[in-house]
Amino acid sequence: MTEGHMGLTIGVDIGGTKIAAGVVDEEGTILETSKVATPSTPDAVIDAIADAVRQASAEYQVDAVGIGAPGYVDDKRANVLFTPNLSWRHEPLKDKVEQRIDLPVVIENDANAAAWGEYKFGVGTGHDDVVCITIGTGLGGGTIIGGKLHRGRFGVAAEFGHIRMVPDGLLCGCGNQGCWEQYASGRALLRYAQQRATATPDSAGILLGLGDGTSEGIEGKHISQAARQGDPVAIDSFRELARWAGAGLADLASLFDPGAFIVGGGVSDEGELVLDPIRKSYRRWLVGSRWRPHAEVLAAQLGGKAGLVGVADLARQG
Image (cartoon, rainbow, N blue to C red; front, top):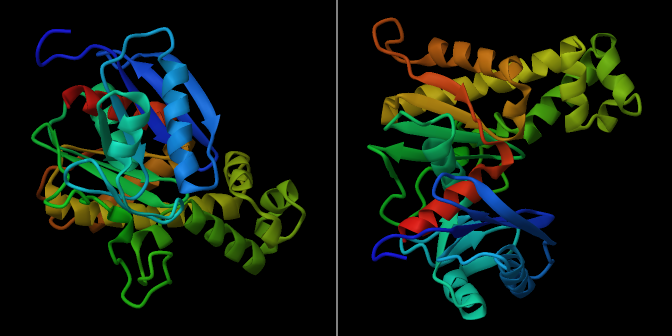
């Protein structure tokens, strides 16, 4: 390794059920992966991260490790300030993992890591100013400004899911009301479908038939399947989610004026079923829409590997 230059690095993605580690080269290609189950206790998670890194790197010489962590990561990219699911509070994750694997470690928010992966190796290639949103169970995001990941003064920028879209709106898991992710997320999509199926069951025959026949039996996968089969309630539920997603993008355009928005996460896997109405809503709510350039609204390209590839590249930069 020459001074100031790294070759192979490892990216780690901490999921709710599995921790994935992958050896990644400078072109963003994953050469080797390993997966271990996500333990239930915080300290056991750290041991599992170390195990996954050792397994992935058994046949390779790696120079650094990047870890994509859910929650708030500090400005030094060393400590997880807060993550609800793992009960980490000011957790010195960098130091603890380095003690176990004897390699330099960089910590980054998982949505930031995914945004960087899409910018560097995915659909964001060729753009210098990009805003990414990930519509999964919740809503996350990341921002690239002038070719650099924007982290903010304290490291916790781009927590887009907790922008308050509706004053005194729906209660969010964060404790506030009316957060964007309560209206544009996988949870929101399920709520829309269940409410509409209850109100107009005659229009939800396909959707209800995929479950147990009740609105309570509808699952997220059923909505996608039913929409592809033309179920009116399922399609309308996606349109409602897209309406809120596009309105949020219009607000972000007023803040950042990006060249492209990249929409990732599980919901974006539905392609134009959700992307086309998001674009229409974005144009509808964009201030001065008739007179200003419109950012492209693009579907993410790397899927579930975006975060792993992105954080591995951020580790390469040190």
